[in-house]
Amino acid sequence: MTSSYRITLLPGDGIGPEIMAVTVDVLKALGGQMDLSFEFQEALIGGAAIDETGEPLPQETLNRCQDSDAVLLAAIGGYKWDTLPRHQRPETGLLALRSGLGLFANLRPATILPQLIDASSLKREVVEGVDIMVVRELTGGIYFGTPKGIFETETGQKRGVSTMAYTDSEIDRIGKVAFETAQKRRGQLCSVDKANVLEVSQLWRDRMTAMAADYPDVSLSHLYVDNAAMQLIRWPKQFDTIVTGNLFGDILSDAAAMLTGSIGMLPSASLGADGPGVYEPVHGSAPDIAGQDKANPLAQVLSAAMMLRYALDQPTAADRLEKAVIKVLDQGYRTGDIMAENMTLVGCKAMGDALLSALAG
Ligand code: NAD
Image 1 (cartoon, rainbow, N blue to C red):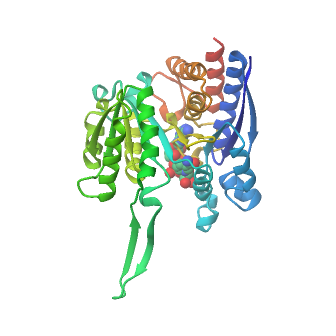
Image 2 (tube, protein in one colour):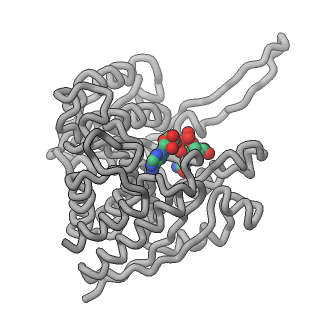
Image 3 (spheres, helix red, strand yellow):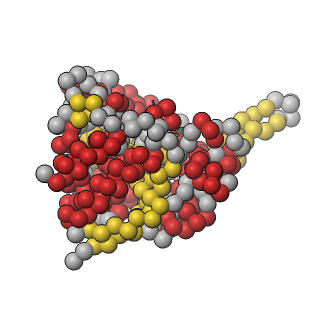
């Protein structure tokens, strides 16, 4: 029986439409092979939405996203919209999408593909075999805590204030995602905090420790964030799944991403308690290469693989897509961002064609 899924596509700005077009073609081909039917509906976000409607996230887009099984997002932003007031910027649309869909968990894998080991800035023996998943809390912590603002003190000085706060229920819900993610991986979860200095981190550590009793198959460890940053660069292979708050996760997931050496290869997923998740590449809209057929579509394609695995529960299809990516790399095809000696330089469309052949073969 054919399984049918409704997917909202948000191509956004810059290279977004180019990498999305490749991904849709690939999903259609995969669907044909595996009896999966995708009903794609496209909607506006970011600069494209501002140009058309004046808003970075039109209500119609949010409605469509809410009414779908999963959302596939490319990227938003560009020079053209950089000087608009904050509430009209493309980035505001992204934050509104996250909060509109209640996406509190961000999953970012950092996996070293053998074919791209030399793209890493670290030594081969340090990065070979690295396979880390960073689970970052996305809607709480210091980015959202109150009070926040720049206030005037009694002495006339300006004082900038941001507040790092988590409730126990906020910690528990990200903890649940993290423990369950670790269960599906190698069963090791490292919780990162700053409990030696911050009360908010002490509560974080207490809750994570308490939750561990419900997951006897997961081994939980704790690290302070400064040490975690050091360990990620020193010996990243020690990590399986990392869970951390919004600010620490923002920084550590970028550091973990750089271990792989290629931003054009990294997918991510943002998940809520229920309802559709958003699957998107880690990179931005790359306005410097937009419209030139130079973009690497593989992070977008790998985001679609995460969508198949986590949102649609189609692990076999996800595996097949990931294998096609490995195959085109094995065949030596490279876009400019991951180009190396003796490889074949291709553009975005040609990489898409190579993927279609890999799937067919
Ligand atoms: P960026 O990720 O867009 O680009 C950084 C560098 O990496 C550029 O040189 C770019 O050409 C290259 N690059 C990125 N993705 C690539 C790909 N798929 N293939 C080949 N090369 C790739 O980051 P930036 O330059 O800091 O930001 C550009 C715009 O993107 C800004 O407006 C920013 O706000 C936005 N942005 C959006 C998101 C998002 O949509 N989630 C994330 C980050 C930045």
